[in-house]
Length: 599
Image (cartoon, rainbow, N blue to C red; front, side, top):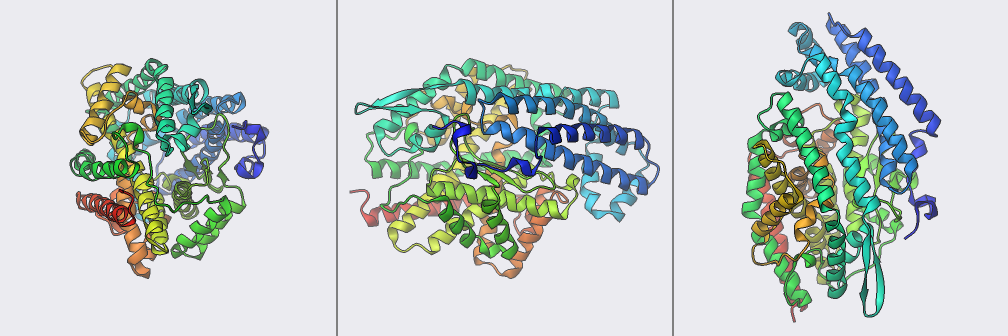
């Protein structure tokens, strides 16, 4: 694998579109610190709605600057864990940004103390700020005094440290031993295991790679367990300080989601999805004529006999054609993403696995992935471009204060893109083998990733927090036990849990980002229902969805979904989506029999 310095620059993103160089970055960082000091002095008292509106505009400008600074400092650390320079830059940003944050912390508390008539008049005269102000007033019982809030803000880099430690350990320290198959040595690392060998159709390669990869994780499990326990204990301390009954309640308050909806979501999936996914696991077992279906075999996709490598230019054309239903301006955004180097798709040492999109306010989006020419990666690009399309529109139509969309909704535009792309490919499939290829991509990539991988993380995460709320401190042995129990509950006797399965909790960074895991299946539920409207609906459905993309965080996540035509206040949309997954698996089974893959 190449070093970062050796990859073709056209395969990397153009960070200089945010800041031309380090000097420009550090100058802006100091300038933003000064603006925060001025803000604290100017708005320590607010006696009119006019002054409150001016304060909101000034705060929005600072938030926008912080977003650009944080993006420049943060995303560069994700593409090369072996380069110390971005790490040092990010550490400097963390130190200064905590000072900036401490200068701003007084404002939320101030809003809960000033004359209610001033706040209500501002909400009425400036409806775009209505939901922002409502959220602050709703959490007034959990806001501490100014000095305590300032201390917590200054400690932000410390509270954020576990994620940095996790990333450094996983992508910088952990080394995987090579495997040998048929006399040939195969080198392994995080990227090639998760992008290639975890789904390799050669059973010996796949299972040996799984074994060595998880042996490498096991050497670091106690350190990783200590890091994660620090994360959850920090959150427990803050939740108690803020007067929440539990860590989960505090984290859900950030998303503006009631506990009942969260619990019902996890419970519904665990009750209704396993039977479908167990059937899919058995289809894989029959297609590949496996002696037994193991956890190391679950990432296999079904070989329908239709497959091809897709160059990045062809991926662009697929995506543009598949998403043109969203409008000419949306298509133009997609074209710019490829032509103007918004996407970092290089494969290099030290690059984190997975994919993400970040859209710094006032600048274009940045997408990180590793492109392996497989159709699953085309879906990943469509997904991340869904995030880009969402925040490109939100940033253009809202102040920076109104672009902090609830995590509960944030995966909806991305997954809507992904499902729409797959339905486009299915509609244009020329024969049964190509149809099977598309249907299996939907399950093995889109729904497995969001409704299985991240769901199991969510079920695991909920129990972790429930134990922490009872006063427990968890070791890696406890974490292994919890994750294994969730796997057993989901897969039953249909999938054998081989050694290392229980270490899956070590493979995702989402535990350091609040209650992120369950929102993937929530977002995909909304995305599935929206995709149905985009494919089969009328122009009004498309127009309504495009309007939702413009709204940013001016509505609650439930109201955003409702405006898109999806009711998430009960489990019907979720259950309909689970049944849709079951229907796809039934079609896969029928096509496997028809084509003769079971023979």
